[in-house]
Image (tube, rainbow, N blue to C red):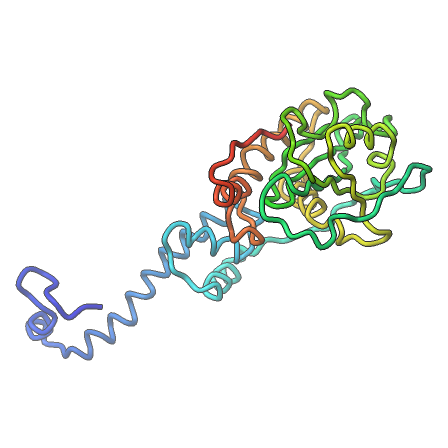
Length: 289
């Protein structure tokens, strides 16, 4: 709102006098129409953002708006999305058990509990999820850096395999480069992580093993949160032809969406790569397998 010159040498007072209306009438009309026009533009942008990010809630859409320079209250975003039926709907997918903790391998204590992270490569979290393909079943094993929640490694496991494949090139661990001392690898108590071959690999590279407590899902919440996101935003509703098709499409989701585009509320609404760059001075990013 301004009372200065608006059209050449005509200020608000001059234009009101020429139009035969009072200043109060002019401002009442402005307050009735200008905010509605501004909200129309905001509503249009929210609709486009919600359609392009179908699994974002109103807080996520609000973060996207702020990245575009909009200063908007989250209550306003919630109201518009509710009025336009844009609030995302969550369904509960069928998730079979992927953890077999009834085995004879050694179970190690939970070292991750209470860790205060200040950077990458301090704590890795690992998990496995079940995938139903068109003609077969498979598991996907992933490793995330707990500091940035970036997926740093992933491998496929066919349903017939009881443990992770023993060939070093097939491990879901990004161990191609030297790792810092004190790195902790946290997982559940499943046989895939407790077996001797996996434990030996961790020991060989100086990585300390850590496992969740019995019946406590919060101990590995970050890895499980990623699996939930993967199922809801990529896997759900899609039919993969085979393992190669699933590997290609899920890999593209991890590389081009989750790691580089998806905003995380726990990361101050930054992407995992942006969060790493902000806190580690532009550290080089390796691609997830």
